[in-house]
Length: 399
Image 1 (cartoon, rainbow, N blue to C red):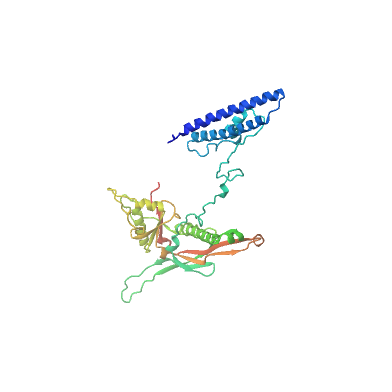
Image 2: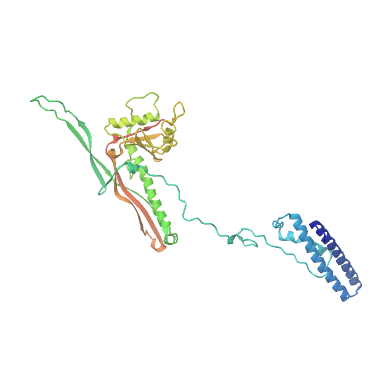
């Protein structure tokens, strides 16, 4: 049975044969150079011998180079991937052997493979353009705030631009027991005419007709975004509008300042919420809810007693937020460390002159430019019937 040779032994044998072939080629080349210097012609047999020696040397050179590269890289499929073309040429074993033999004829070939990369440049081996990206459907939209204030108020509709209502501003009650035959006392009522007007909240966006046709969901996305923008502005107006210019007169500027009927011992934010309910009750408008910033509601829910037990919050509970039996509306439309408690359905009413809507049309030279203008608008009025029905104040978390 023949002995199996290791890779190192095979490499040594091939290298020895290669060295002998190189020596033979050198000897033939030196003999040929000597004869050429004396003006002697080379015999045909000598030329054939030289060609055979060169072919054998090149074959052995390629085998040696291949074995050395495989043994050196230890599994690296492409050790020359970081080398330039010129560097690969001058380091090629075939080129070195060919130059060492000082040849006067023949050729040597160097095969260089391009490294395949994900580049998209115009260069050998750049295959990045062939990779298709993974595109998820739809658009990841920005977060949207949950609107809540409109739902607290009594809805209504109006005609025309102006909303008028009569408000009772005084009542002198002289009712009393009356003796037989005695004159009966009279009481007085004072009324005042209040006027407010509908305000337009609107915004628009411009889009090309090509974009609307080519992107199937773009129109619905624009409509939804525009309507959300109206609701966002409306919520801020309902709470904070100062009544100047085209602003609504909101609940907070109209509300009554917090003025507790008494001062409890070591008053807390939870105490203030209860006392604000009392203040509304004393004004004959029992409160129906609280409005707080989410940060303040989290502070209240995390309040603990002396034994680290939650007073309000229940980490495992799923009930709707409530405080002193009333629902709590947490919205960023109200500032941190502020609260609004009130009888929302009795004390105020929201009137829609125009329901929120989206319209599409041409503006200026839109038609000739294949553009469309998408407009969203609404027209609303807010009537504050009883300012004393709303109590506004500080929670005391921020100094």
